[in-house]
Length: 175
Image 1 (tube, rainbow, N blue to C red):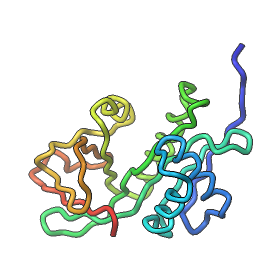
Image 2: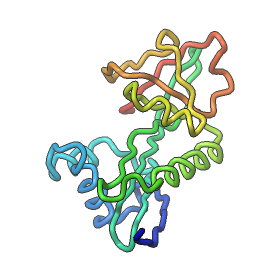
Image 3: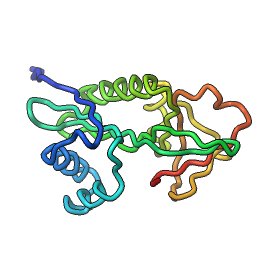
C-alpha cells in the first residue's frame, strides 16, 4: 500500500526565513553532509546572502526537500553579470524515489526563467543525466573558470542561449 502525503513548497529569500526554517535547512543538510549542525549554521551565516533564494518542500510540518539558488557574479568577455548559482538539492532519505526532487527542479526552473538569469551548477558525472532531464546543458570545461572554488566536477548551465558561442565564463561564488 502506498501512503499518500501532503506537501507544500515555499520559496523564500534569506531575509524572509525564520530561525526555525534556517535550523531545519541546516539539519536536513547535515543528514547528507555530516559536518555537524553548528558547522552548517556557521556556514549559513557566513556565506548565505539576504537575497539568495531557498526552495523548501514540506511534508506536513517536516522539511523533506531543499534547493538553494545563490545570486552571484560572473564575467564574460570582461562584462560583469549576475547569475543564479544552483548550490544545493537535497531530499530527506525517507522521501527519496517519490519524484519530490522533480517538484523542486521545476520550481527552480521557473524562478531562473522569471529572473531572466543564467544559472550554473557543478555536479559529479553520475548526476549529469539527471540535470539534463530538466534542460540543463553540460559546459565545455575549457569555456569556464571558477576563480574562488576548487572542484573536480562538471559544470552545467541553464537558460543560456549563448552557450555554444565563443564566450569564456569566469564564475565567482562567494561574492
